[in-house]
Image 1 (cartoon, rainbow, N blue to C red):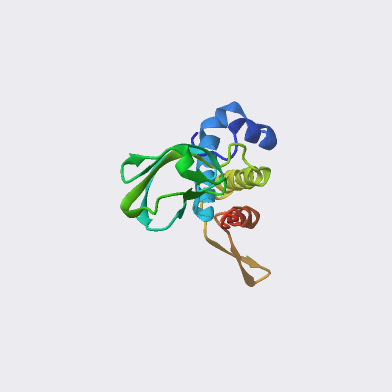
Image 2 (cartoon, one colour; image 1 turned 135 degrees about the vertical axis):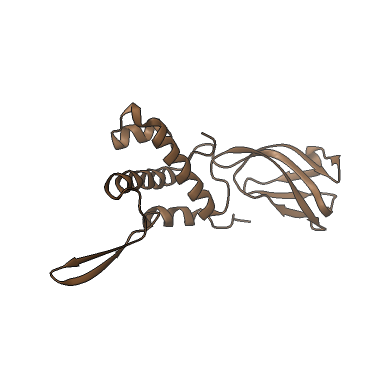
Length: 180
């Protein structure tokens, strides 16, 4: 699974699941990993990217994510640069030494970004979401929303969130800007 923040094998052991649940759980892992990246607004699991960036005449540009694991190629206006003509910091910043790219799609970048080893708190947050979804699908048929209940004649309302708060706060922690 591309972009998965935790493996089936790890979730299987932690949640004591059976092999016949693998396809469903992998779907839930993929969904939770996607939610994490949406909330963090960046790529979290390492993957190859091939992107273009508009040039503004600046010397530095920010990649859509970090950490940067490797840079395969950088082009400015169709001229492939040599590694001594730029630097790419681990926090996703490209710095050009003698160039100030400008124009639409002026910079082409090919490389690998994201965590090669997923931090344990991200793995735990995904496991929490998968566990919550398993409970939700087995007890309420997958419904998310507001539940109204009565207790001793009084109406109480409970809110059921799509993502557990602890998982949400973990994902938002990864949305911080890199240290520049």
